[in-house]
Length: 158
Image (cartoon, rainbow, N blue to C red; front, side, top):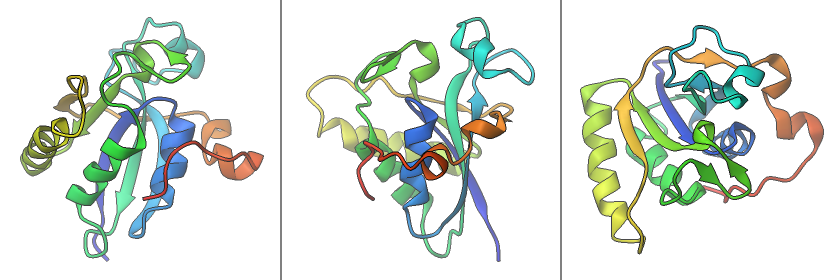
């Protein structure tokens, strides 16, 4: 089976991870950090605002079962992309909304989808669409956080 990857930041990675894990065709989701300048950052460093990273998820999916376009469409629904450097009670640049593209095709799809999504929102979409750099997996205790802690998630179903 051939798989592809996608990287999204939409606030606290725990909820984003839990949301994407509900999408049929998604095989795995890893919480982590990307978009900054520090190598192998820790949660404490990212929260300290000195690394430039966003809390993000790396989604591994089966493109025969779910397309990148469907993942991007779900991304717009799972958070408020008009908020700058925050989602709900979580405030800081590490909670920014971003799509980290891994190919020119992903960029094309993400940019077209952003234009279409803007028609739904009254405020301008703040989501960055940028080339992906290194994705650093978060510490083990952040992975599958909601599953392990039996906590409900605010992210809508796909």
